[in-house]
Image (cartoon, rainbow, N blue to C red; front, side, top):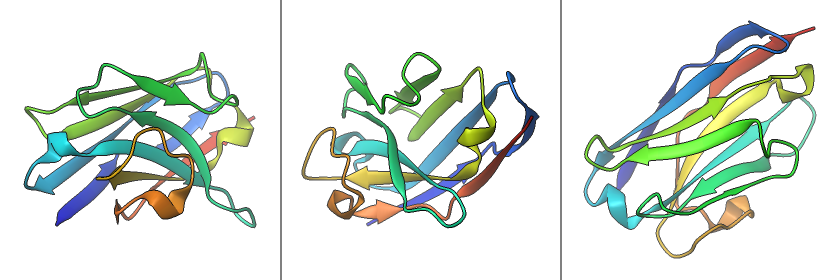
Length: 124
C-alpha cells in the first residue's frame, strides 16, 4: 500500500514556473514507476510525465516536452514535477500516481495508487 500526497500547486501567470511535489508513504517507493496526470474541467484525465524506478529514464507528453521536468528522490520518497514556461492550457488538477507493474504507461488505468491532486491555475 502506498499513500501519495501532492503539494506545490497554485496560481501563476503565463510564462511562470511551479514545482509540484508528491510525497509517498509506505514501503518500497523505489519499486514504483511514478507518473503525473492532469485533468482540466470538462476534460478527461491525461498523461503528463512518467519516471522510472531509479529516476534514470523519463517520458513526457508532447504538450509538455521541453517545459516540464520529472525527477525523484528515492531517499526522500518524493517525486517532483518542475513546470516552466507555463501556459493557460496547463491549468488543471495535477495528480501523481504509482505503477508497480510497468514503465511509461500513459493509460491511467495502469496505475495502482493515486494522490488527491493539487490545483494549478495559469492566468493569461
